[in-house]
Amino acid sequence: MKLLLDECIDRKLAKEFVGYEVQTVPQMGWAGVKNGQLLALAEADFDVFITVDRNLSFQQNLPQFDIAVIVLQAQSNRLIDMKPPVPKVLATLATAVKGQATVVSL
Image (cartoon, rainbow, N blue to C red; front, side, top):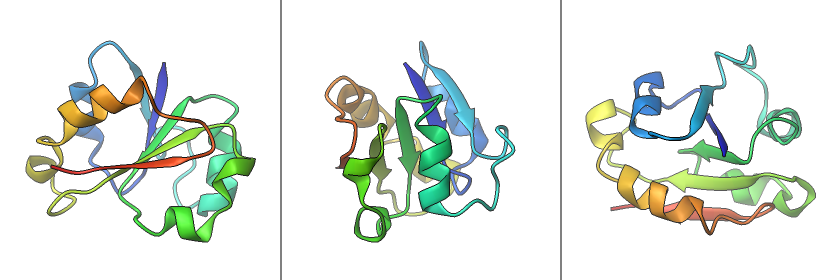
């Protein structure tokens, strides 16, 4: 399974997703790309897009995209705050549905 981390997530968080192929938006050269276009680019190469953007599901028509979205809710975007919910994200990956957003928090 291939995961894409949004640009507002610390790239070091990728190390927490052992057993998955993980890239970040900047690594793909997509930094600054708006959400709709970003999802269109991502759906070609990735299975799941992980973001902290709580408004994404309200701003985009997710069913039109062939990629699952996980919205990670943490106290902040700092790595120390993003790590604790990772086990829940890992558990959610198996049931994440393409075209839908799943919210994961502590």
